[in-house]
Image (cartoon, rainbow, N blue to C red; front, side):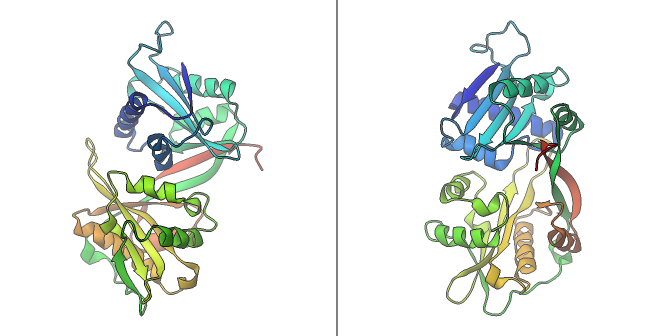
Length: 313
């Protein structure tokens, strides 16, 4: 068992990425949230903000300094206030051998569970059983919804008067977009707290395309809303798929139908790129959003579940 505090080096990061890719190919879901990978790759995690636990080969006699096979990992990204989010992944070749349990037990011994919640991407039965063993229960459900349709089958939704769409311009729109995003997601647990560093880290990702980052602006070029799209490339047997990455409307522009118009504009943009399957994430208890997406033809596809201590709150 290897415990790493702070950032990870390039070799270990490559091992993480390879294991995550194998897990995603097997499960159909990435084992890590995007923010975790952004933090890992950015090298900005700091000496106490990231705790990684890696198990090299299940053979107890193996030397973790020389063994080459990464069987699994548990990673915690911590906030300055000491809270953190745990995610665990086990390589398909090493499952049903107690790897995840040993990782979590080591985490409990080295860090403890104080302030810790955990994501299960796809909410696999094994993850639910492991959470229950350590006294954790579901506290949040994030739905993955999917739409498979032709652009011609989508309804029309015109932009409000005096509102136009344009693409995000790197080097020009960062601060204005961050302000609009903060206002639009003032009560969102993750999106509303995005920083310039978070934005730039995503802009540095291979998938980023400013042409698919649509801004709704008024005649003075003030951002009223936005639809940031994303394309997940084909991997293995899983075809490429578009994503409604984030749609936001500034408070002063709400009630104008802008959210629906932006959502449809982004979906049509993805269709024009040849992507007829589109997905999105939304909180299961966000009734207005779920209702809108269902009216557009989205159906529940899968779910990520966050677990927290049963006695929390």
